[in-house]
Length: 464
Image 1 (cartoon, rainbow, N blue to C red):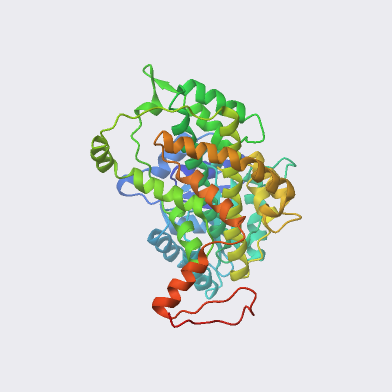
Image 2 (image 1 turned 90 degrees about the vertical axis):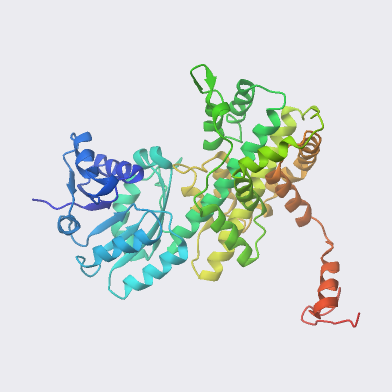
């Protein structure tokens, strides 16, 4: 019997849909899942539910699963990030041969991926850390895929990955070799940080509009924006979410205001702090989710705010549109700056134009802006260096100012918009008050300081 060309471990939502995507594209695929606890019968049920696919083979034994694959074996793990990844790798390596390839398709931390890559290289087993974005629908119909490892092993799995990936406007696969060792999982992590911020900006815009608009009205405005340069997947689904009803009630109005998070947003923010990049919007988005988790405390304290809440007029829709466009550009500027700096530090040589290209379809942050970003990076190292982008930010500054003033008047928290505005103001200010910070540091700690118009390598200290 002809052996399978590809294997998938883990039949959760993503694993199942990727397996079906692979099979539908004509590849013979073997699937494996542990057969115990709440995962008992996962394989059997999956095969029964998809019996029309004759090119899917299912296994409860990892040894038989590995034996069913053609060499060099190509195995995609879709398991929870962390210790489970190491557990499955240890199980696999007992049965693998030299040059077999393991692909981790979960949201693993990129430094963990680098360690696994190095450890498996010593055993002559190839390891690819592959970021995958698109959710359940993307996995089934075509995700954006971000593999990292080494180019030679990528070329062996590329026929499958590039076939199942989403396609861009030119019908090219939204899948490319990102860089060595942990580069693939790194860019997926930053992708998710950008995603956190994009979601928070929409949430804050919704909070502002809700003061005087109905769900239907907000949805209509978002839908109209989605027909413009602001078009994005997140804007599209948000417009649909706002008007979805159940038993005559808007579902959005019944959902508890406590946001979950899975770590990639905070990982991105922590990394930005470590390398000194002001990723202020994604960091504010992470903290906004943390704040939302204190529901009982918020509820208790809100009762103590005794003054009657006055409702002030919110800015016109055109002002809101400009402010939203402004903040999204700043978010992308910050996210790609993290990628650029880390790429240089890790010697990954990540092509920002190609990376943003594979984010133009299939992934959660796909948008018209991302299409523009891909083109801008062909000629500029940073988005803010592009003349058109810079002019858009300049003419939109006043709109953001009006939005923030209205937020203060109406007692609406707009953390992400504040972060975008403050970043822009600081980056376009010639002289910041950091001179006072340096003087304070020198006063209490003799940390020294540099002087204006002096040799930048020369440092001074004052006996205050």
